Image (cartoon, rainbow, N blue to C red):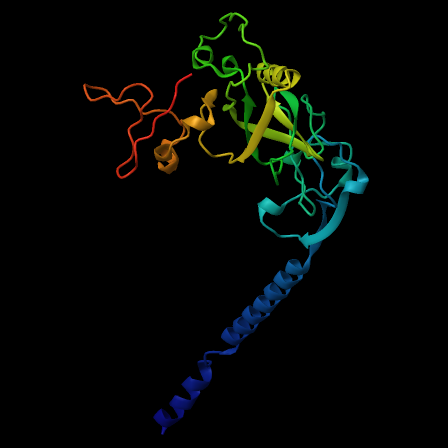
Length: 298
């Protein structure tokens, strides 16, 4: 009988394990998760005001308050979108590059000093030691300030486009040719490709301002003063430079030269073949299947 009474008594003296603590910890964890989620949501909704460009700002232009606008961006955002929050940091600064409408401003776009080289209204900068040369765009067709121009001329005087003079060493003093700019009766006119890939700085109406070295601009004005007919063509900025001073008259145009792949047409002239079977002067070697054509040398 005593043994039967001892079991309940020992059970009474040994307290049962409590399940309250795990439940309490579970509730605390849920509450912490909800609080963290709520905090994260609140933080994700927080924004700050940053400065953007209200309109295009050309390179080198001083920025005024009218050039600026404000937008709200999330407070927590990628570093690339950090931007500037204080307009006083921007006003009075100079654009270090072309800034487009709605561009997010950052310190790399700003300079406290104006550029030390001339800048055009489109933001293009005239590079050091270069000069702008006006060129009429009549006959060129649609063109932008991102294009380049190839320039040539049409004349009657072969001395204006002489290969020997073109290949003269730098600094050589050349004698003035005895031929006149107005050719004698019966002399054939020719076209000469002169310069290739000249950058266009700015376009105003029918005039393009080209970026040239002083020597190139001087030569261009000399041809203009001599009333030599100039022509130009739009050319790609990444295209291969073409050869200059390449005289060609209508009688020298031959079919094989015009049907070669573009990589072989930098120069339109006879292809001289070495060896005993070389053609006589004035005769070109045609492409397979093309007729032999002759040309006259000046």
